[in-house]
Image (cartoon, rainbow over the protein chains, first blue to last red):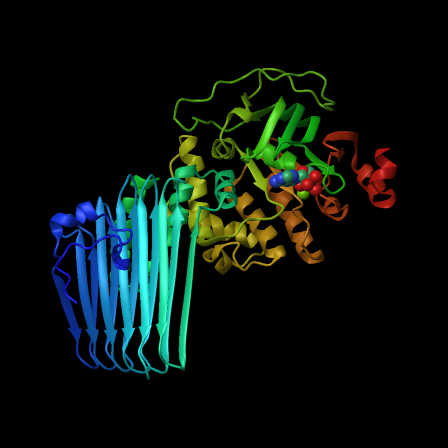
Length: 243
Length: 284
Ligand SMILES: Nc1ncnc2c1ncn2[C@@H]1O[C@H](COP(=O)(O)OP(=O)(O)O)[C@@H](O)[C@H]1O
Ligand SMILES: [Mg+2]
């Protein structure tokens, strides 16, 4: 579907979008990635002011694998939309961290379609939100008729550093096959006060204690990435400005 | 010299009065045991000393005399306050003018730690994703920074950690795991003592460090406490339910805490009487 008209709040995928920021960028060019059967690929997206709103269409052939990591941070508005289609036995990994402060709006919107049997997908999204920031993950997993043996997982967690920050998380399943394994977990929380006091009692100043815990939290999105260290370092740098 | 001087301390938790005019003075080189029934306020005392949020001091004072230099969180230094030697039942009053007397309650928890206060938790907290090694190196170097000392390098820290883990017979591999995650009750308590060894505090409050330990572990922990803390310039406040630990770590004084205050003070024999006769009989 090519929607050239600017979306409205009634479009489910744009419910939490910053439409004012989106208007001058609309329509957004869809970048296409195709991995042929048996092939593999990887991509790291670090959100930048050059391309704050991105839309990717990823098609994986039979047995193909793709590993996508995203650091969505440091923008007044940052949006990454994904549409992923998996053929027989394909494997898709998404690891994303969103770090927002002030009145930033960050969102990741995904549709992962298991179009054929035995494909696997793992999505891990970690958001850290301070100030009046809003972090959103809308993730639909669609399992087509006959796509038996599907294994799809979504793990979505957000940490609010201030009560004024907002997290929206909506993992969604649309299943038309019988033999599928779909797991999704979704939690919004605050840093554990007991752990913070425990660390303070050992001499770690509060900001440093928070960073240590948040670093561990975000690491879950980047574990196993080819450029894990660089991503972690970039995320840490951003964290320093949040706490 | 007095290491810790608690005067007429009252504190509330969630608006409920728990400590009700508690006084206690602990001298350098001394080990004091606090015993008392469940709910007496023992853990509350340790949290108040550590500065845990939600534990509100409504009256009284706590003065720490630390042998350690300290610059305070902002680098501006902490102004010494005069200790108040009034009505507390101190067995060995300190001469004035020794050490630097600091108003402990005016400091943030991490500043208290940098001054040499260590809290051994009754229930050590799990911190997923953060390894002991990472956490303790951060802890030690934060303390050292506050005291104007150079940080330890990774290699220096690991050497120290290995030494203290060996002292407590804790497998060094366990310190590479996330803080307390998946540790048994006894392993957590042992790890608390490894932390104490690494941080080398001037004053330790150990809250039921003996609970959850089997007989062998109790001996190891007892020996560890002696090795780390039995020094003329240090002191320990040992909170316990049982006489057993006190066989290994001989206290100089035993206090009974009941309903938020010290109701009786004696020597090691008091712990034996408690074990034999129970709190009600002895404290009456
Ligand atoms: N967070 C809390 N909120 C309300 N009451 C508390 C809290 N923590 C402790 N208390 C109460 O304070 C009293 C003393 O508890 P505690 O200091 O843990 O006793 P002890 O360690 O001697 O067993 C108990 O009555 C307990 O119920
Ligand atoms: Mg207790």
